[in-house]
Image (cartoon, rainbow, N blue to C red; front, side, top):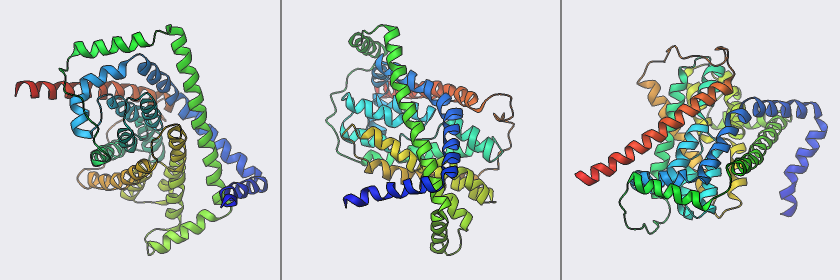
Length: 385
């Protein structure tokens, strides 16, 4: 049993020595993806989210959005910040923030696992820019892809509302902007570090995290290439062809297997393997909802320092992928293929990460504003009706 744990890594090492050129090429591909997109698009959000948490913004939202998050998702209002950030900047920031809140005692174990199950999404910039514009060559299709991912994600959250025990909820207090502001001040008083030290600490921690993410991307890019050069991927693709009774072609099987391992590689392969737009969008939605083993490894590295169990996250990813596929087909069935004149970031004269950053920032402002307005509406409705 002990030897079996190291056998896959020994075989991988042998393969890396036997195919050095392929290893170098795949590692370069993963590193390029990280350096040209992941690093510039996500690193600013890692820093900002860490600063906002340390400055008490999470406590501010927690007071305002308790009436929204508690009855709908059985989560404290503070979880709304994680929900907003994961819909804005994408994987793996949801897992990072959830684990931080669990370590700080802001979430119970059941609440942390519940939140973890539906707080892993690709960023809207990646789906609009890299997938819709770059791979499908139709930026307007991003509307369908993003809609499928986010609608199915919220459905997963509603389903996981019934997961775990219900914690003892403290008596309701009067919710007001004044009390929310007071909670913000109390949190800032507990963290009296100078602004320069606070920023330096957030940058240092975020740098460590983004390097970890980059390492996983490069590592799983190499694993995917090794599986391909030794024909394991093709054998598995043939097996999927048999299991699907010929409905899934070998190329489609390869795309699906690559997608199960690493999202971006699987998305590229899916666009090439399938010619029908409905199937392309459906497979892309499934792969994006699933996330890939690379994401699983990233999340596992963060949850390892907490008592959060990994199984709820895994079940959430499976459910998210299946629901995203179904929702995408429903949207395509009842809508025309969009051809709106949405600017293509690949031809608009600006870098894709810059466009992604702008979209993500605007989306963050929008979703935070929407959550606050809904929370205030529910509070006023309960007060006057």
